[in-house]
Structure formats: C-alpha cells, structure tokens
Length: 244
Image (tube, rainbow, N blue to C red):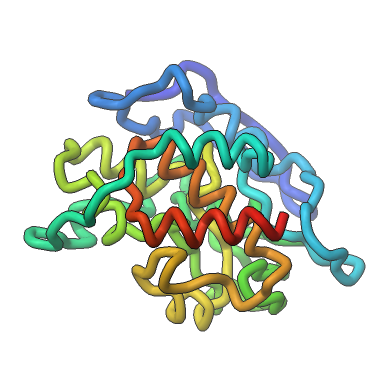
C-alpha cells in the first residue's frame, strides 16, 4: 500500500525530497479515531510548543503529536479497561516489526530523530550527520545521534501483556512505528535502559517536571490501541496527572 500523495519538504540546513512512501498497514485497525499518518509526517518539521520547563536557547524538546490535556487524559484513563496482565508466553520483539521505512530512505527511527532534534542535517541515507537532541525523560542534551534511543512510550512487552498478543502482525507493526500519537520518543540510552519494559507503577521519568506529560502520553497510546491497564498502573497514572 502506498500513500496517495507524494510528500516533499525541506530540512533546515539541507534539502531532501521524499517520494512514494511506505504506508502503515491498516487491516484490523481502527482508523476513525486516529490522526492520518501523512499529517503526522508533514508535522515532523513543524515547530511545536514545548510543555515543560524552558530550555537553553537552541535546544528543542521532543514533542510527538496527539498528547491530550490533563483533563482529557483523565477522561481517557477512566475509559480504559482495568485487569490483570496477560502472559509473556510467546513474546518476541521480532513480532513487532519496528523501524520500517516511512518516507523515501527514512525509517521510523530516523523520522523521530529529525522531528525531535535541533539543527538536524542528514545524508542521502537519511542518517543524521549533525544535530542535538534533548531527552525529556532526564533533561540531558545529546549531540551524537547514535547515543539517542527511540523509546516506545508503551514498551512492546507491556503492549503484549496488555492485549497485543492477540493482534495481527500488521497491527503490531503499526503500533511499533506509530508517528501519529505520542508513542515514539527520542531519549538518552541510559533513561531508556532504566525504564526497560516497566509500567508507570514501576518506573517514572527521573525528571519530575515531565511526569505529567509522560502520564498523558501513556494514557493516550493505551487508549488509541485499546490496551488494558492494571489497577496499580491506574493509581500511578492518576498520581502523575495530579502533578499537572
């Protein structure tokens, strides 16, 4: 499947044209409540307003699209199914095909690096050659793209035990590469490793000022994909929302 329209845009400091992108698979997937992926791709280069403490001049804050307000997040949270986690039996990261090509030569990871970085320049393979990335989890700025991890807000293993074990392969792929909701974040490798597969009742960002945004994003992704939460998870998310 391909997008019906070719998207061409300019990068700051470099010009790159992308055509005939690979679309996200949509079978077994509810699109009515979702932002169109082509809009999300176009928005990657659109400046966004950060909802956190001000940063040093010249640095951007990662701002994936679709983060709900605190009040909207509370409503979504109350609509989530609360239950026990499922089994990890059968789980493998390979079941969530990630970092697929999204646009031209750019895979999902590279698209996030471009979206969330400042002064990002890329080569013909869409690999960043320069730029800086502010990690909202821990407040650290990174200037080497290879030192940046792209975190799944809802870890793939958590998704598996929350309902994704019953999904089709195409839906799991869409989930692992979703640019239309706050699922993919550019963060430091250390903060991503610290988080691992843990849910909010087991881990929260060390940067306290980001916990409100973290909870709102977690809730939005779980709601978008109709994933379950545990009672402990709901309690932790409620506490984080109370900091907003």
